[in-house]
Length: 343
Image 1 (tube, rainbow, N blue to C red):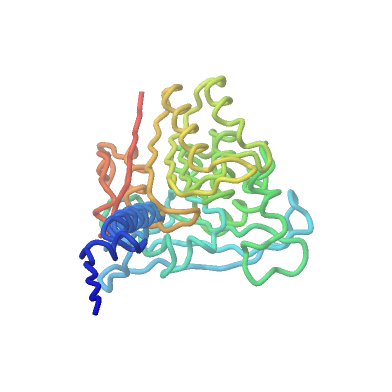
Image 2: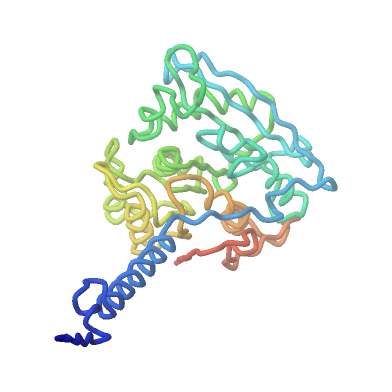
């Protein structure tokens, strides 16, 4: 009887199969690298910011009144229809009062939205951190019946993204006379501000650029300083034009839009660079958000403090802190970069 003995190495099966120890280790390393890459990608997603106490309704703070009206007889934009609103603080006593105008008024007006302007104004005016301010909220116009959402009006880009003085004339000829008929708003340009988001942001700047004799404070959130209708020229115009007496607050987001019209984040940084070069009184605050009002709304109370801080004087009955503040005072999640210049 022939007996055949077969000896098998304990490692032979591993060498003969692709899923050996070496391969398992290699796949383990690859898996770790992939997981780490995913975590990096997640860290680079837009952040969500949370509102602070300045943006919350307080029962002890008196509420200003809000009056809504329709504007259907524009001389500057004939045939357009739009909704507007006026906020009047309880501190208004009939004396000349500061003014602030908001484009895309609907997005600033809601008490549970991104900006919550009536709530913030109630709180900061009551705390004497801002002067009494009458706020005007203007929606973009539409030819014919208004759509379900003001974002879809057919005249928004024409009004907001176009350069020149047309929209400024609309304010002075169609809107402000209606406000002045009921309320005593100041004619002092240093006491008049204008604000907007996205295309409404470049619109707000255009008004102050064209009419610094009427508006000298500007606030923008993710402003469309891109080539939708030629707004990309502003950084160069600012550098080449005699300095104008306006104060500008810019809010920008790192994850903003990048498309055929330009890069919104870079466009806002170019604006800030030109303001710095020319010696403007400006401030830019950068967040990790997308093309929306979340970050701009969370920092809105601090932005208002800064924008109105130069109104402090020996006779002022309110006092703002002109030193830069961090948004952490208004947010439990905060990642911002701030650059301020004044010459």
